[in-house]
Image (cartoon, rainbow, N blue to C red; front, side):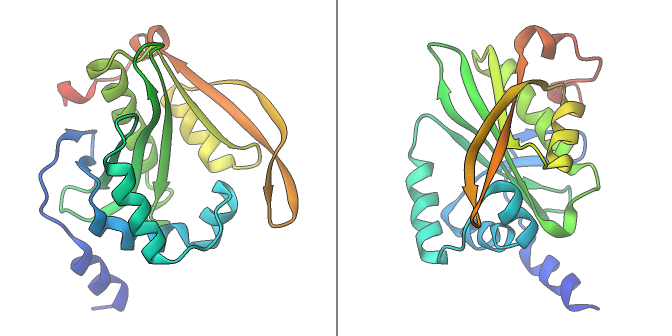
Length: 197
């Protein structure tokens, strides 16, 4: 057995799933999930693409605990059927009066490129439009984050524009792409919804 397999086995969880996609399930994020989030956020690719900088685990744990009580967001750990955590997905800045929210996704580096991101975002969109009064779901990423842009487009997000030079990371300015998915566009998507799976 390799060290990576041992780590994965130790990281598996039998927590209750509150939502699901084709091959992933969601469970509410807990403070103890901060260690997995810290590891994923420390990945150099993720740190660059999302524009993160290293933070201590204790600070991330405090932030997760604070965010759990935030009524304007919903955070979930993304789980495989065997309980392996593979990502963090969230609805941020939920405004139920205007019917808007922002989609967020961070995947475990060891589980990228396997379709879990698209599956998780499809399920997140189903949650936003099928269970909440969301009319507009938006996402923001670097314009050169080709993997994220591909996943967003597969989920049905439409490019809206570019916020030029809107992000400073590692001494360079980056453009940010703004994409959105409207309720009518989600309704027209030719795929089963989470509750049909």
